[in-house]
Image 1: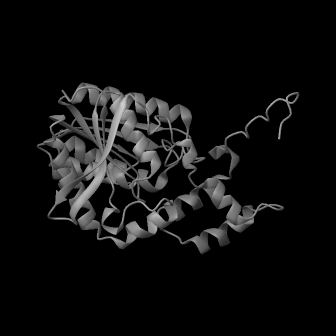
Image 2: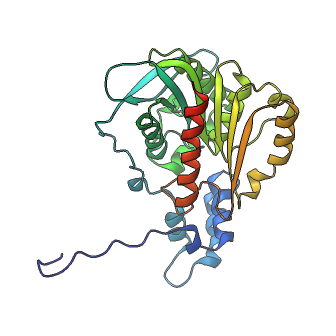
Length: 307
């Protein structure tokens, strides 16, 4: 405890990807996306454990710290948030998500669907929805885990739960959520989608599944649809990729060729020297410069396209 004569201790410096070997970062990526289990991660990470630093400690250091996910606090008076349900007859029957709008009188405004990663509606994604509301949009962030009780408060548990769900039903739930938001009283009918990781793939999917209502989609490091699927897209795309994300980036050349063939309006940015997940400000993979620049581009894109 500090005495009156002692200055408060400086906070520990925030860890970044540069504090870890790139092989370990890639290993965590495999684990986070279900390509290896926890035991395999720990076994392979053991060679990076030095002294009293264990493989388990390394995993904890690389995992999200949601105390950092508060760019817009839950009780921020500038936004109004509520959890609402929506019908999903082709999916789980019913879905639930966080609806956020700017504070003040009800109004019809452009709307953006926010699609989470492969672990449910965690605090980071909820914060993204609040950021969009501050930028003047009605934002809706559904939770794919609602049929199993919702995001459990832990990403590892959330990842396990999402793996138990039928992927086709998850997609139908997000299709239903997009339709729900499109006709919501506080939507003017101009619908955008932004998604991260798994959600980036869903953003690509919604662009071709709902070409008549999705006017703008922003996939962050998302998996790509087939050329035939891409041919249905009518809205505009803004695609963000991480330069070090070879796993996802491998599908970009074929996707770009399909978009060109279908004459889809798109912009793409590949941020050099950053990792998959660079926008997520709760993990060491976060890259402040790339995250802020990509977000500026995202907001400008939505303001230009959702009119």
